[in-house]
Structures are given as C-alpha cells and as structure tokens.
Amino acid sequence: MRDQNDIAIVSPRRADPALHSQARLRIRTRRLRCCRSKVFMRLSLGFFIIFSVIFASASIVRTAAAAQAYVIADAQTGYILEEQEPRKKLQVGSLTKIATASVVLDWAEKKSGDLNQAVTIPQQAFVGTSENNIGFQPGDSITLRDLLYAALVQSDNIAAYTLAHHVGSRLGSLLPSDISSKFTPVDAFVTQMNALAKQLNMERTRFVNPHGIDYRVKPMPYSTAEDMARLTRYAMNKPSFRFYVSQKERQISFDRAGQRLNYMLRNTNELLGRMGIDGVKTGTSARAGQCVILYANRESEVVRQGQMETVYPRHLMVVLLGSANRFNEGTALLQRGWQLYDQWAAAGRLADPKKLL
Image (cartoon, rainbow, N blue to C red; front, side, top):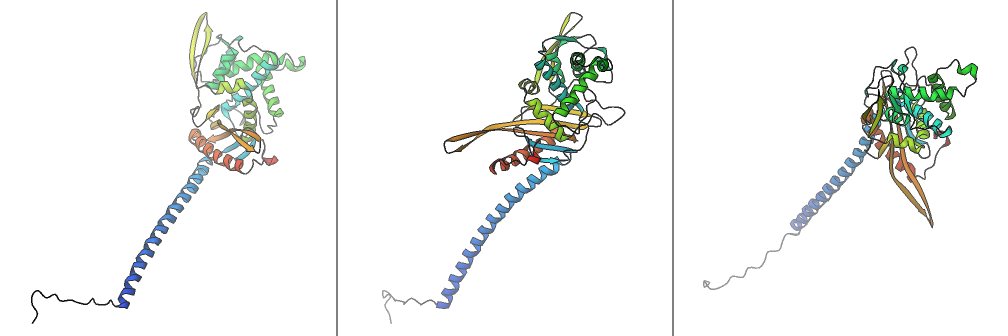
C-alpha cells in the first residue's frame, strides 16, 4: 500500500504514428486551402480590375457611337486617332461660323482690315432668323471685333451675317465687274468661304450662308467630321481666333441712336475650362442636331534621347456631329481620345499618311 506522499510517476504514452501523420496532413490541407483562397481572391480582384477597365473603355465607345459622326485627332500633326463616318455629309449648324470668322480674319490680315472699325447692322441680317438673344436692331453700330465675339462666343446669327455683309462688300469689289454685279455682298463672302474650303481640301463641304441656318430647299449647308477637323486646325492656328473661342464671357458694346449699350456674352460651349478644353464651337439646328468641336490641351511631353530633348505639344481635337447629347458624348470621346493618344505616343507617334487630315 502506497503512502499519500508517494508520487506516482507515469510514463508518457507514445503517440500513435498514424494519428500524428493524419494531424499533419489536416494542417497542411488547411494551409493549402488558405493559400488557394488567397490566390483566388487576388486573381478575382485582378480580373475585376481588368474587366472594369475593359467595360469602361467599351462604354465610352458605345456612348460616342450614338452620334452620327465623329473624329478624334492629334491637333498638332492632324493624325486621326479614331473616327466614325468621317466622310458622311451632314449639316453642321453654327459650326459654319468657324469658316465665317476665318475668312474675316484672313481678310483683316491680308488687306489690313481694321477690326476696331464700327459697322452698321443691316436690315437684311434679320431675314430668315428668329433668334435675337442679344437684342440687336437694324442700324446699330458695332465694331467688327465685337461682332466676332458675338458670332463665336454666343453663336449669334445676326453678328455672323453683318460680318459677311461688310467684308463681302470689300471682297466683291475685287471681282470682275460682270461677276460682282450679280453677287450681293453676302454672296461674295460665301464664295470666299467655299474657296477656303477648297484650299483646305474640304472636298465634301458646301457653305450657303455665313451662319449655318438650315437651307429650306435642300439639306445644306453640309460638311463632314473630317472636313470640319481640317477647318478647325486652320482656324486654331490663328492666335486671335484661339483667343476668341477661349472666352467664357465677354462684354461687348454697340451704339443705338447715340446711346451706348453693353451686353455680356456667355459662351455656348458648356465644357470650356474643363478637362483642359479651351475651344472651340457648338452648332445646333433642326437638321444638324447637336454638334460640337472641342480642343483640349495637356502639358507638353519632353522626350530625352542622349543629350537631345524633343518637346511634343499635346493638343487633342474632337469633332462631333449629329449628337443627341453633345456634351456627355464629347466628354466621353475626349477621355477615349487621351487613352488613344497615350498609346500612340508610347508606340513612337508613327503616323499613317492615309490617316492625316
């Protein structure tokens, strides 16, 4: 019989090797499942990100395709990054005023025309248009410069007609007498607009008036997204034009029966100042639908090769015709355009001559 103070020493029982092996297997299985779960989660996250980008890009393209035609181009080189129905003849509404302003500025430069000269708004300027947001009246006196602002910033039809009437009377005097006698001043001006279009290889464009109001008899004036891109590049190379179309607001003045009147213009381009956009013009008519041309800038890219540096200005141009929502679609196209531009730049900016404006 053992005493209560005696300590019984019990030998440890040896674990069954089979049970130990099973335990280790269960631990390894758990670890493997955990690793697989982490890998699956990482792969799922990766696929989610990839497909999100793909679907985001696809949504941009689908949104843009709702318009009848568009062109996205590098404004510096004229290289077309993407296009849809670029040569389809469409009416362009007040985008016509880009050509109107270009002819006026060319005339002022070549013939030393004074843009500060005051001209009189003619009675004919009110024929065929029901819009008069500024409140002009026949006989008002206003400078050519303020007429340019009114036509480009607030897209005023009366201003565009008055510009054409004044400059056209000067252009008509340069024509042979047997021809000039058959032309009104505005006819002579529109002839010059079409001559400019021909000079710029705008082969599928026809202007019939200086403001872009729909022609009653035929679907005119018409142009294409590609042709309007050519015209815009030409116009935006003029510092004065670029300044006009970059203004969100501008006060103009005109005289009426000895009284000085002021008016604050508001730019019709709602995207101006956003996403680097600093121009250029909207256009709207019953047949044209909603149109817009956007011009956007980013900081120039500097590429170093050895001791040489090459500076690449980054200017993107979007021409959108026949849209139901020009500002939403224009924004989507611009985002898409910068994606395409970055890919093109990374590939060395190679330009297929067939895709140059």
